[in-house]
Image (cartoon, rainbow over all chains, first blue to last red; front, side, top):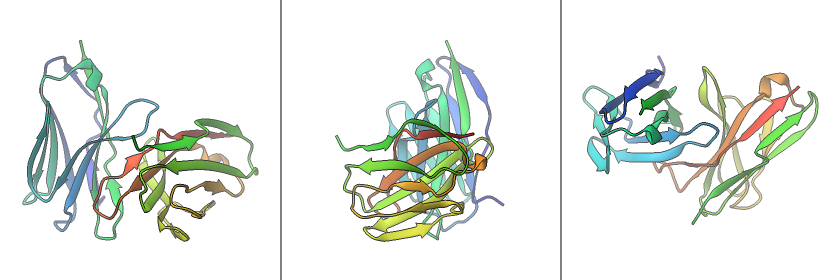
Length: 110
Length: 112
């Protein structure tokens, strides 16, 4: 079983839609969770960082961690064509390594 | 603004050649990392360093080496390039364990 699993998509939505991106992780001891956005031919860019459980909001983006189900989510409200990118979830494992999901490719159509 | 820069952005070389990819960060971070990104495999850790003169192997370290002589730089060397090492390489840095890693824009390496 992979330590962090993510549905690779691709996911296509119309402009203005609410997008939900999800990952699961294997170890309930994981504490630090990140979402990165990666545009084509660019490096991953930190989008959201959360510690432990709960919600964090930043503009149109909300990150949610549910430790009881070992589930992390990223919600994008009022999605824009500029949100079209690959989204990567990540968590530090107990060995101190940052483990990434496979990435979900999102396309927002005008 | 602090940043992390990689060079070159693109490189084509031949099998058997030695290749060095540069990574320079101005975050003043202790921790630095090298990843490769391939379709179907995602980001995989090659080598990492927790400070000057410290280097450690990641999950796909065979055929690669790093050295850390100062805080800002962690060059990645392919000793004898192989076609299986054709990939996109990313360098990253972080302040400490648990903190987010910040990435460069990558080097696209093709080995013919």
